[in-house]
Image (tube, rainbow, N blue to C red; front, side, top):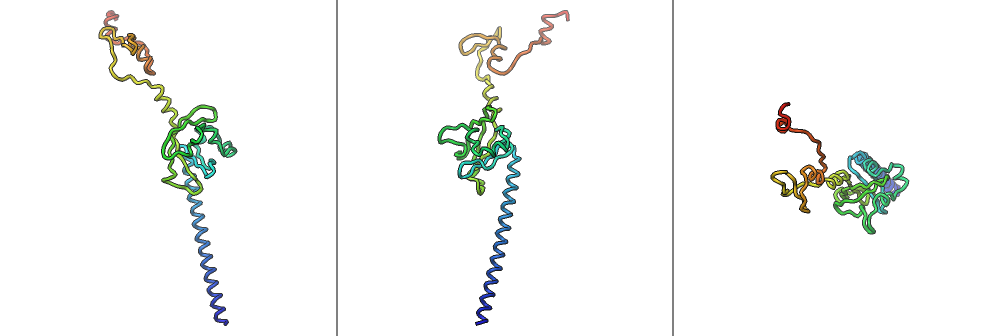
Length: 205
């Protein structure tokens, strides 16, 4: 009887020892995971692109410094309003950057009311992160869009007078070369005289 009791006690101690080892192993794995996740967050915080993450309830749970810079909202203001995305991105009913499957462009209203254009990419499917339902990478392309809108490229065949060098526009009017270029580009003219014309106009100089 005593031998059976001793054997049972021995087995119980072995089980307890195994449980303690398993608990230590799981704690170490959890600590390692938390450390890795914090390190990842630190890296993402400093990335020169917008990064934001959404939880299962649609709340903003992670954002980086570039998000603060482009949005104009400080970390304290964002934390005070977890639904800040609704203020920043006035999207149509049923549409949201959180629903982006791959890539898309969205208008992004900063705190000062200026409109930003951001190219978003959803990379959640490639790099899932525990606790983040989805996370997006955004690139501020506002200046690029504004530049493209301002540029009116001169292309194709331009009818130009062989004698006076005026250019005929789409309405059939003949315009001075510099006036046509100014109307169809961002170029501005400043006048001077080339060496050949100086000789012709001022032969005594």
